[in-house]
Amino acid sequence: MGLDWGPVLMSVIFFILLSPGVLFQLPGKSKAVEFGGFQTTGPSIFIHTLLFFAFITISLIALNIHIYAA
Image 1: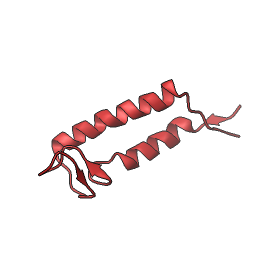
Image 2: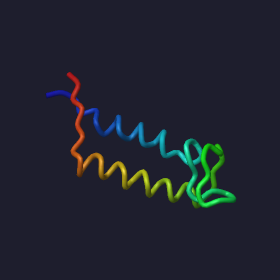
Image 3: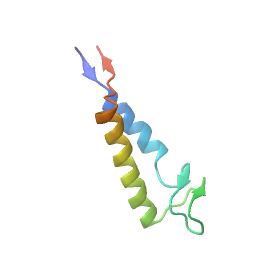
């Protein structure tokens, strides 16, 4: 078969997109949601960790994403 790169690729993409402060921050410092602030807080790290876990679980288990390389 080959190596399954699906979990690795999806994890890297979600890690970059869900890093607090890069695209959005939930909760923000002064608002509920801030976009492109490039700052982070403890609660936002916790929320983004839960979002990462939920998205990676859905994409790998429920959607069954696999990318095979020879």
